[in-house]
Image 1: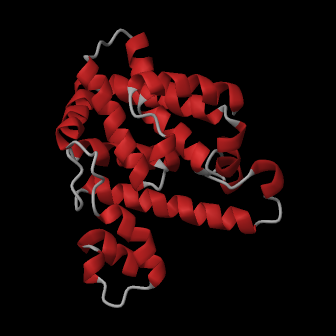
Image 2 (image 1 turned 120 degrees about the horizontal axis):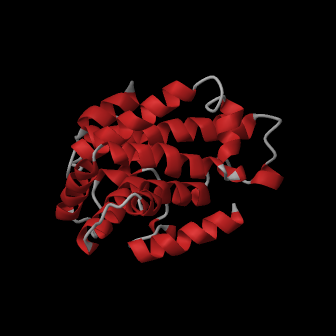
Length: 216
C-alpha cells in the first residue's frame, strides 16, 4: 500500500516512510540533469510513426533475440514466464511500452513513469525470490536480473528496435535515432540501471549489441 501511494502521489505523501521506501524512490523522484524532454517527445512521435511494425520488431526481433541469452532467459524460465505466462508477459510488455510512449515527455506522474516503477519493483521481487531458491547457482550465474542484463534489455527497446525497423525499410533522421536511445536510457535509469554502462547514442548501441551477442 505504501509503495502504491508513493507511486501514485509521490514519496512526500507517505508520512514516516520506511527507510527502504525512501532509498527506493529518492534517487528517481527527481529527473537526471541530462534529461531532454523534447527528445522524449520526439521518441514518442517516432514510435507512433512506425505503427504496427514497431510491435512486430519488438516481438520478433528484440524480445526473441533477448531470449537467446542464457543469462537473461534463466529468470524467465525459472519463474514460468516462458511457459505458463507467455500471453500474460507479452500483454504486460505491450502495455508497458504503450504507457511509456503515450506519456510523451514521461513526467513524474505519467502512466509511463508509474508503469516503469512497477516493472522495477517486479524485477526486484523476482531477483529476491530467485536468490533465495536453492536451485539458483549464484556462483555460476551471478545475480538474477543484474546490471548487465538490464543494459542488454535497454538495447532491445532502442538500438535493436531501430536496427530491426531499418532492416524493414524504415528510415530515421539522426535526431529520431538519438531520441529513441535517449528515451530508453531514461526508462532504464528509472528501472535501476547504472547510467555509466548504458548506450547513450545509436553508435554506442550498435557496439554494445555485438558485445552482448558474443558474451551472453
